[in-house]
Image 1 (cartoon, rainbow, N blue to C red):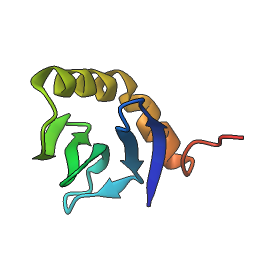
Image 2 (tube, one colour):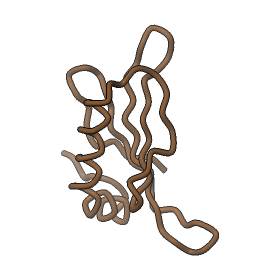
Image 3 (cartoon, rainbow, N blue to C red):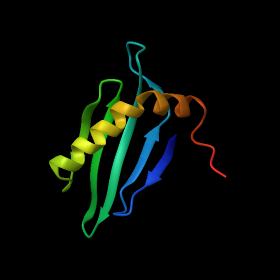
Image 4 (cartoon, rainbow, N blue to C red):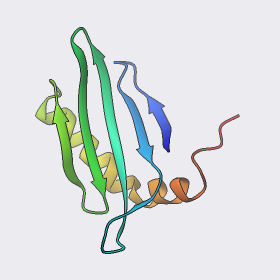
Length: 91
């Protein structure tokens, strides 16, 4: 399952996965930043709790990617919380 967090004015959408488990039992979440382009999408996907980029495609700048990294680092506990709760409950 994938849950939407927000959408930025430049059309970048932030989504996060449900909690998944690796073969060793470690829990993880994937947080994706995607922006539509004429040729597809600019995409950056982070895996939490390692904060590693597991997918990168398109034309996000280094500065944008660093902003995204800060978002996932600062909000990691919330991504896990909302993934456990089945996403954000927006009215």
